[in-house]
Image 1: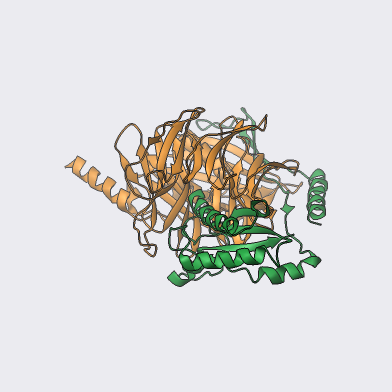
Image 2 (image 1 turned 90 degrees about the horizontal axis):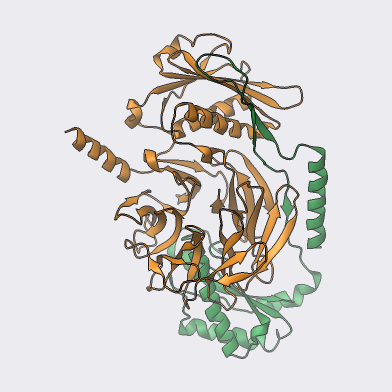
Length: 415
Length: 182
């Protein structure tokens, strides 16, 4: 009976609509967490930080988080009487320092026993959300859970603001922090150039030919990499930052090329008279990509330099985008040939080692899936009812979270 | 002018960032553990958010009036959902464009711009726009326009002429435009 109930719960989750940050009653079995606010002054920063902290604690997916915080003195040795109903208590205090920076202190209690005390400083107020992410990372670590290093990553997006106009914005996974780095013209498909996330590639569509540039965010130095007639997109950067997978069309046919960053030389990886796009590294030698070589777009793989290709996905007739991590592939598939259906494109997860297929989304247009470096999370773009959002899928917890963009439409992302 | 603006923006950004902390960081001081206060294992977590902004606004050239007038005579061509082949009626429009390109507009370069409806921002959609542009380019060449004068770009879904959520509107966005360049 227990297994039947468990199976029903799993099926319900797999087929449910995307969850937002409003955690439902499904999580009642999780340990409870309440947040104690010791900041004293009820400033805008204080309110925003509290909101971000509650959001991050929810995304950890290991607590049933109380939406209401308590107000206590930070130096109280015990947790407050109201908080004793909760299994865990997170107490924080934000204070402004003399040099216009801010310090956040936290204490984390497990059943009235302090298990973590830490402080964080930032030099600009608008970075507060990264403090919330760092706290969530540390609390998660104390709880002994799978790392959420991905929370601290910067996300880079291209945001369509008007016809033929876009901005490239550095943000976080919740879209709370936003800094526009390129404005004016049509610049799309930003891609971090390295793990340090201090430079990125992007496509400029403003000139005579589509051109790939690299911008160093420390110096502001912009460098032209390569241009091609028709299309020029950096689809992926190798783990060491030395190789790029480009989609170019020098003769009008979109194909995938491997570009060596140091030498500036490139080699053609796919040779097909139809469409080959969206190359993604599986490892140093193998890639997955999208091709219409069977008459419809689907996911294929090949070894760089080899002639043969292998079909990777056997479900869906219109699979137009993908991302890979080890044996796992997430891909975007059209659910219906009706372009006007509200349920047009969904994300699916497969393993190359099993026949397992898992549908990750249920409504709207879900696209641009990207695995985190550890493969535990998928970031994606969701467009639904005139709202563009970043979606987060926590695979191990079977949870989806959405973070909407207030203005504009997200064209592409990388993290 | 564009280069001047760009250079100015970068220089301004460098000057600005030279006066302030450009790479703000979270300095995380750890004092955890089993109900005890401690101050060991200090570490710094670099956020590396940046204040640099590059402005890439284009500026209009004053001698482009006649070019704009000719460009307005170039006809856009339209495609069926998920298709990139030209129908007979659309092929005729491209032939008309080629006639203009080889006569009155023969002094200009031609940029063939492929566009798609809003169903997807991924590369495949851009490739679809490119295939549309490539078919239009092939027909221009077939009608006497030198390939040296033609460049192509796919804008995917990012250059819509209509933003309504209707079939008619999406059909207007599945198109190829012809632009003239000096």
